[in-house]
Length: 88
Length: 425
Ligand SMILES: Cc1cc2nc3c(=O)[nH]c(=O)nc-3n(C[C@H](O)[C@H](O)[C@H](O)COP(=O)(O)OP(=O)(O)OC[C@H]3O[C@@H](n4cnc5c(N)ncnc54)[C@H](O)[C@@H]3O)c2cc1C
Image 1 (cartoon, helix red, strand yellow):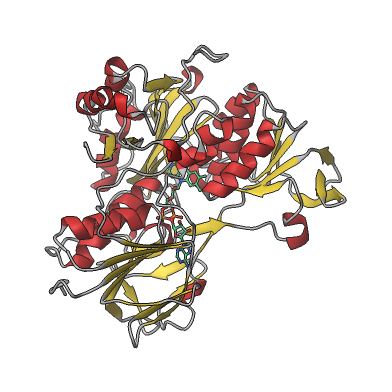
Image 2: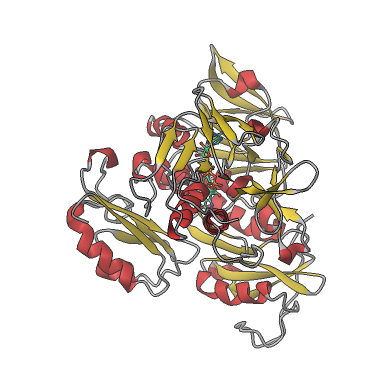
């Protein structure tokens, strides 16, 4: 899906409907827009303007491998994730 | 003062960012006793920064802002019922629900709330909003999604500017009214405020600088226009009051602790002081609500209302209460970011009292630059606009109170730095 400005849109998920999943938070103070997360997980992170990295904060369970990879790829370790549910 | 036996109880008051990081730190420090978290709102701790950004544009749903956490199921959550009274004599925290909880260690992290519009009748009109919590963001998002013919934002601080930005991203006509001569001037100075103000104007924000909104007009209880002190009437159907925050300290009335609307007072370790200035070794405070002596600012008590501060001070207070190893005084450099007008603004240090500044990196014309602020010949703060990668280098200069202007520092200038006036009065 693309919105007007051509960024791919995140799926609009209602967090409360997810039985299992992830929560993602980016420490923007640490983040320096190296954008490695975007390179390894392009469906879940995007760059806005010149240096704002935006994660979808609540991806679906199937996305966890991508998100974990994005976390390790970050040179300044700005990404925090929590894996919800039993098979974490 | 360690939380010795597992029968000792800890309570965290407030269920926001500082509270969450504090509770996690207690557990990480090995505290395994009963841990209760008391929150006025019905939600688990969530992230506020998206509320004035992507939640307003509809790109992120408000309920997707719940914060990641390492806490397990061994936490007793009391959500939706604020603490109303603290009795330190019997070490009991009373909740609005009537429930009384006893504690051996208490962390105060009740944060702030939006400063209300001074006229209570006008503040409650349909179409008038403030923005602090999730419910506020949901209500404002709904109003914006309905396609108002104009939005008036009252106040040009960080949140006011972000709201105006979100309105433009939604293609909504927006007027931002700011009493000062530039947006963000109080936090960052007139120099940078003027530059960012021009960025907002180029994106279509109608900036009214040097004006005050005198009153809000309504028809049958619904807001229809804002009236400026010079008599101008701005017709609009949404007004956002963004006039800063007041600390949530009323519940400490009668506790014997030292507090006022500016925060609750702590010592350099993080313990809360009583009215006679003695630390209570059972009680600590962290985040927006805490006023503490910062070693970098001559030990003057300051309260810092930023995300990174809530994380760092919350975690430190958690370790303190759990009896971890003694640490040095809390000295984390205040830092924040803001996304607005298509740029990322980041700051390290406090600009307050700056008497000089220099553009140390980049240039204003390109829209990417970093400004370093000095006071009495020392580096005190740095602000980057789309130039964040250079910020840590300057944060280091600030932390070591390096001379201003910096000599031989990593600027990208061949010539000596131009010294300018920051416009902080
Ligand atoms: C819209 C918005 C956007 C922001 N954007 C940024 C940004 O881009 N960058 C940045 O650095 N900072 C930003 N901030 C600031 C940052 O979010 C705060 O500094 C941070 O949330 C402070 O955390 P805290 O835990 O101290 O307070 P809070 O997050 O306010 O948490 C306090 C909690 O205590 C609860 N509470 C209050 N009274 C009681 C009581 N009597 N009993 C029990 N519970 C109570 C409240 O309900 C609340 O949940 C933003 C803030 C807002 C509101």
